[in-house]
Amino acid sequence: MAVAVASDMFSATEQRAAAIEAVEERLVSQAMGRGLFAAREFKEDEIIFEEIPIVSCQFVYNKQYGYRACDHCLRSLESAESNVRRLTQEAALELPYPQCADLPLPSVLQCSACQAEFCSEECRSTAWQQYHQLLCHPSTDSCHPLALLLHEWKQQHFPPETLSILLPARLLAGVLQSSDRVSANSALANFCSATVSTSHAAAHKLLGPEFAQHINVLRTKMQDALGDPDISHGIASSPLARWVSRTDDLMLKAADRAQLDTFIDQLYEKLDSTVGSFLNTEGSGLYRLQSRINHSCRPNANVSFPHNCHRLQVTALRNIEPGEQLFISYLDECELSRSRHSRQKTLKENYVFTCCCERCLEEQEQPDVTSDEDMDEDDSDDMAL
Image (cartoon, rainbow, N blue to C red; front, top):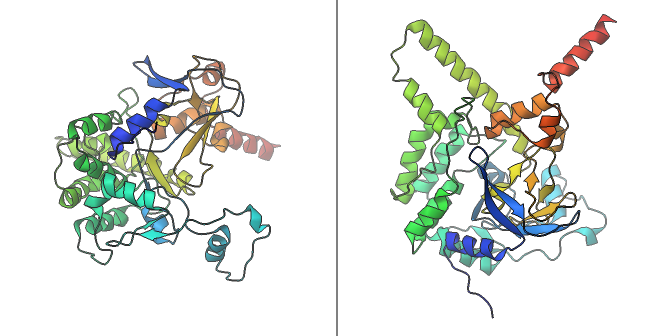
């Protein structure tokens, strides 16, 4: 007998997570938090589980630059050939082996009010039930609160993109459209945590350094668009922004204030230096189970998106025993090949933790220099010769 899926985004997510019996969630430690463990044996290359997110969203500039995708599931709405023709501006370009393309293309359905495009009636209906009712507005209404929110976001966040302000907007709309706001609020709180490391005074930079200065403007415009919902943890907020704001109230000598301002400027420059690593990402999503998988520099699992939409797939990179914790790499292949010190530096800057995985412990006797510093020394030696 088929099980009815809840229309509420949070209830539906919990139902889907509970139906996945291949993994189980446990507390690893106070320092690491929760993790995901294999509930049975998995062979190399075997699919461990697939998951669709609580919510996903295409990046703002990505959409503006003409990448057509379903407004709900991010499925591409153009063929491979149409895509390369548009990008290369060569209208006559033809791709060989057309049988290798995704066929047939989905039928494009639009929201009658805002002209948002969807790949199916299911996506259009699900979006409407979960969050779109509150966010829908005529695309020509440039004075709508949501349009003003997007405009403010775009003034301070430029490609390469790492997040869209519409993701927290959709989450907030999902809480407001939920028939059980208390449960929705509780489910959302599972994803909220401090983003400043007390041991390293590091800061998460997912939203970009400009977010610190403009957080109050964004919060106000978010409230204009969606009201002031009773959310126990602020979504459009950042501990770094609060820290920067509090430093303004410190009674400091002129020299100390100048030193602090220089430190903040340099911190933002460091945070900005790696934003481009997400250049090829079309959007972002919030995943109930995948978000519980911890990092290792010697991962036993891998995340991919083989379905041309927001459905992700987690596969085994090697044989995995029952009860073994799943690990993925938060670093790309290039970063993963670098020295222990380089890897840990990147992880601290981006994810605010010191990696103590098996590989890092094995390499702890390595010099505390980055891979770039190693190469600089090698270049100096070559020049000396």
